[in-house]
Amino acid sequence: MAEGITKMSKRTVHFLFDKPQILFFGWNIDDEFTHNGKCYLVADKSKDIRDLLTKNESIERIIFNGDELKKKCEPILKDIFSKSKRKKWTERSFPDAIKTNDELENAIEAWIEKQSYSGLDAIWNNESKILILGTFPGEESLKKDKLCKEDGIDNRCKYYSNKDNLFWEIISSSSQNKSIPQSDSDKRKILDQMHIALWDIYERAYRIGSKDENILYATYNDIFKRLEGSSITTVILTGVSGWSKMHHLAFLQYFHKEVEEAKLKGIKFISLPSTSSRGDTNREKVKNVWKSYIKKIG
Image (cartoon, rainbow, N blue to C red; front, side):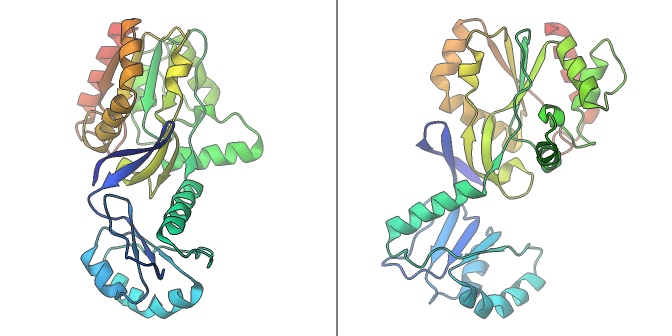
C-alpha cells in the first residue's frame, strides 16, 4: 500500500510503499538494502530466497543478477508459486559492472523508468470548457493506443476503452445524441458538442497490471501549463475513493500552488466517482451523480 510520494525530478514521483513490490536478487553489495519505503527490496545471493518471499508476500516481480542464479532458484520458485496465487515474473539481469549501492540504486531507478508506459495524448481544443482527468489509461486503452500508433492512426479517442466502463454511456446520455458512440469519430463529436476535454494526470507510469494501486513510479502531465489561456472552467478528477482518490490527492498536493492559482482565476476542481467497473459497485448511483453534475455545468 502506498504511504506517500517522493519527488525525483520535475513532475516525476516515486511512490512510497509500506511493503516492497519487486525483489532484486543476487547483488554482492557492502550493505544489504533496506526497504525504506521504496517499491523494491535488494538482497545478496547468500540470502534464502524462499525466506525472503515468505516474509515479503507483497513481492510480485523478481529480477535476478544473471541467468545462472535465476536457473539455480527456479526449482524453489516453482514450489513457492505452485502453492500460492502469486504470479511469477522474472527479468533480465543488470550489467556486472555495478559494484556499489549508489550504482545499483541508479541502475534500478533507470530500469523502472525504462519499464514505464506512455499515456494517451489529450483530447482538447480551444472551445473545451470541462477537463476530465483520469489517473492513467487501463490496459485495454494502452493496447489500442499501441496498435493505432503502429498503424499511424489518431489514438486520442482510446480513452475509457474497456466495455464495462460507464464513461461513454454517461456522456452520451447527457448529450443531444442519446446513443452510445462506438467509433472514434462519434466519440469526438460528442466531446466537441459538450465542450469536454479528456486527459490523465500521468504522462508516463510504471504499473504492474491495470490497477491504480500498482502504480510504482509516474511522471505528471504538464496540465497547468496547458490550462494557461484555455477556456477550461471546471476540472473533474475521476475517483472519490480507494487508490484513485489517493493518486488525485497526491496530484493536488504536489501542485498545490498551481491549483490555488487556478482557483483564483475561476477554475473549479471537483471529484466525481470513478466510471470504471472497479469503482463504486452501485453503478446506477455513479451514473446519476455524473449526469446531475454535467447537467448543472453544461
